[in-house]
Length: 248
Image 1: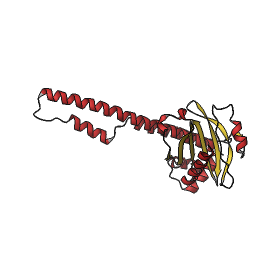
Image 2: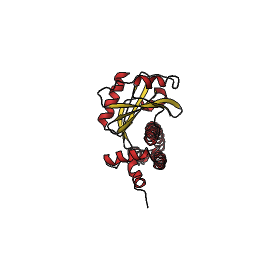
Image 3: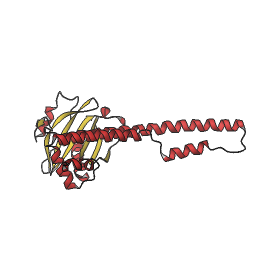
Image 4: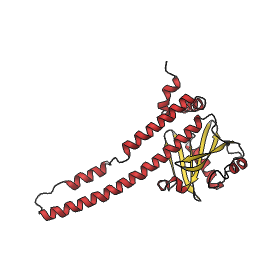
């Protein structure tokens, strides 16, 4: 007999469950190592397939330009045809390099956000999601001293609805950073902080977006790159992000 939770994992990763089902499955993942491991495995597979299929896929506009450029024109002299072909090849090379560069940056951005989504899911599924357990920002912040190569400020949460659960050291690639875990109502939100150069230039501008079934807001401030990610509403994500910006 198929475990009813296992049957829902793929739909969960596609973000197609209802809000109530998402919340129930999040709770289940924190207590079931088997399902948590299955979710992480499927996330890695989806990310690999998505990246392989789209990394260098030419756009329809680019394909149209190629077809138009190589179309033959009657009654042209060999010299003019050669010059035209040379110019067309040069334009195609330039356009191709620009397209590859843009797609490479988009692929790197997707990879970074997918990796952060994986880290957030791992936190949700972990029996010990944080290494320092405290609701006091004055306890959590000093704990990171000497463990990461930068410092940061945390906001005052009184009367905000948010609760700080604690934090731990995490890594983006090989770069160390901080992960803070917050809760609002029944939703957990991960706040990742890294040095901006470690996050990469492909995330040089602030943005809000969806990654899998999560809302993400990211920005850079005073040499640090912040990511706020969770299945809470976009308004809650934005509110916490705004509080972090003001605290910094």
